[in-house]
Image (cartoon, rainbow, N blue to C red; front, side, top):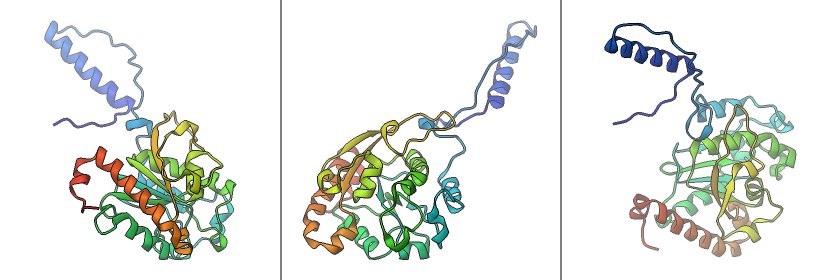
Length: 264
């Protein structure tokens, strides 16, 4: 079994010195001068900072004051779910129930989202086993209005870090706000839904590199926000087609997921 780990420069230098000394001993016992190895600290896979974590992101969100939304919040809502999700669902922002509980998508729209994701085992997704649920902004906008552009920009770095750490196979963008934030487009979800988009993070509004982080690729499927389905039931048929499209793509890339599903 091989274990992959990150090392700082001091660890690498110590290991190199040990190996060089061992080599001297095996050859002739003469201790040779050592070079300046010039090692640098490792970063985590994909260029993320080695010490970053979902817990660190959540802690930063909890004390964030980058925009005025922090002034009215009861709880910041970082997100919840599994650490290596097949799907990451991204909505627009917390509502009253989410602000009160500190958890994403727990009101009526959230309950509908949970039913959509599972669909009696036909889609087979849930935040408990293979999804992570988050929002573009982490604090509730007053009156549940859409986040303003400057508010979305203030939270963009948090969402980028979450995506980088989670590396979901597909991001399900729930609604126009999330779709625009992820895809850098003025188009609404009605025109975007039903298609997969492959995004280079360096071309996304989320990208705000620091510490030498590298861009990465992610895949987005826009669909209607569950709250839109509660307002207009005629949209449910299109949303179901999107969920079947999501299922089909996931079946192509994950055999265990495909084997777990109930027939359509």
